[in-house]
Length: 322
Image 1 (tube, rainbow, N blue to C red):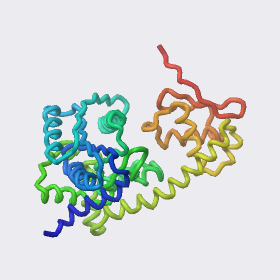
Image 2 (cartoon, one colour):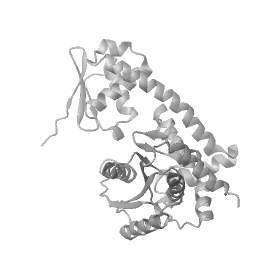
Image 3 (cartoon, rainbow, N blue to C red):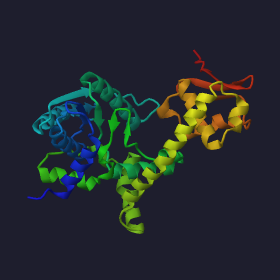
Image 4 (tube, rainbow, N blue to C red):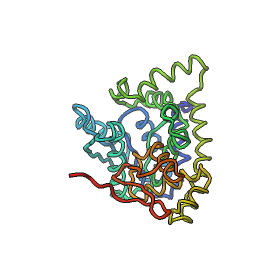
């Protein structure tokens, strides 16, 4: 019997990502939803064929009633799929200053990194699909966050990879159905209180109706094209930053605007600014300070203050009033 195209698409995407030596360990983050379940199934098939150790991990964010029971159910389902080992962890999500989605994402990545180190894993696979990428690009457009947001999610970074970014959500759902895999429908995915849900349920369907099918694929392809440009500029900015470590204002002012903003962002991060909270508006203020459009200080997330001193950009810890 021929392999169903949806199953084949998931397995091929994973196969392209698993260029690891025999005996290596791969972690797959699985929420129990169709995307991550299809990813785990494909990884078990392709990983075992390549002699890899596959570990299924799930994270309980504790945000819904019965989440602990759900995590236990996901562990049993992962074991039934043939993983070599399972693991689960419960995290505390503190949304102060971030919002629930961002706080949950930070907590999830923190615990995944701990698991990766514990198991000595060479790769951690995440189940984001082409549809997730399209939503991310649209959200970036609405926020006016610049090329970095339009570039969408990275296919890989550090020890992490997203093999399914070229696979549609319809394919992951169908793959699970074809393989007889039980999946969970996260009620948060249908909650219009989340901006991403509104984009998924309302905005993308309207675009499909008005502009024709294939919008998600087009947006994802645009992200790939922008990402190449962003990565080149980021590399050039890093080289420039390393050459002007003293952050002389005159030199920063003479730097091309596209590189100057990136250099200032790197400097802010080195000074302790929080990456996930350092937005375009903060970098724009830094640029304005350096080129003389504003005076005084610029407050940055992470209790960091930027100021000018003797012709140089300097950072210090923000004083917190008692």
